[in-house]
Amino acid sequence: MTGGADHGHDVLLAARGLGRRFGRRVALANVDITLRRGEVLGFLGLNGAGKSTTMQILAGALVADAGTVEVCGHDLRRDGRAARHALGYLPQTPPLYDDMLVDEYLALCARLHGVARRDLAGAVARARRRCGLDDVGARLIRHLSRGYQQRVGIAQAIIHDPSVLILDEPTNGLDPAQIRDVRTLIGELAAERAVMVSTHVLGEIRLLATRIAILHEGRIVHDADNRGAGGRVRVRFTRPPAPSALHEVAGVHAAEPLGDGGFVIDLDDDASARAAFAATASAAGWGLIELTSDYDALEHLFMRLTAGRAA
Image 1 (tube, helix red, strand yellow):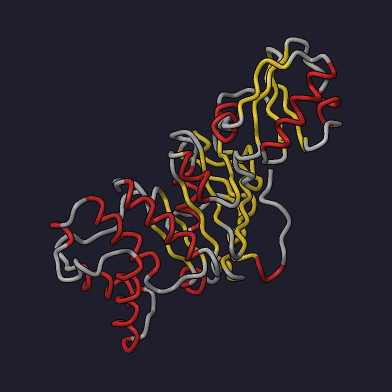
Image 2 (cartoon, helix red, strand yellow):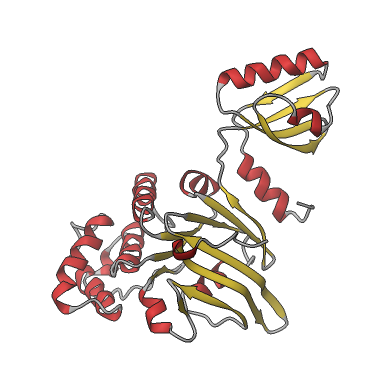
């Protein structure tokens, strides 16, 4: 499954046919990913699925055995300097020098990314402010808590104002308030950029992502808009109808059988739609015995696709 059709200049990152082996093990096989301006792509998968390998390849930290990557129109292999200048990357373990002061480290990262000397102070101040680091600029990185070190890692990824951000576990080690702040920051950054976020916390992706891709055993098994869980409900009947009958009910946009007389349905997200659906089910004699409006559709989708059952 691909990342969808391209839309000209709005495509900021395009990867096609990525493949990578480690010895005899196939880590990635024919992976396509597209990121567009304004998107936050939630990148999900079990441990060992190939998420970090994919993100390392997209960021230019690892060479693919097959495929191409373009960042803002620059081929990562042929024009690596320009492509990397448009990228900000936070690996799973932040690339910190713990004997440096926070401000020194951020200035070094800015220089490595080609920020002009006259702009260094402003770049450091902006990144520090955005990541909640104003109080620790003069402290040694090794003296910071894990949560603050994670913030410094995010700051180095955005120090040069890149068009594409690739963030591997950006909320790792943060407390709930810090997680909320990072989520807000990513949403603000995505307004004029493209952001790819990997995390094991499905709740974060549900709130943050505009699109969700699921990687399983080195292959993309799902790539679609994040419709959220608000309009998805689980229903169960004693005399279940055919899916086609559910599709004919007003307000129902999709229906997926679960077995045991159950379905996950996409329903208009309001109480009147649920009441009307229940009335229709009663009149049709389907024997409605469950209608769960807070059903976690993303968790269901993730478990179904990564447990090896057919999509």
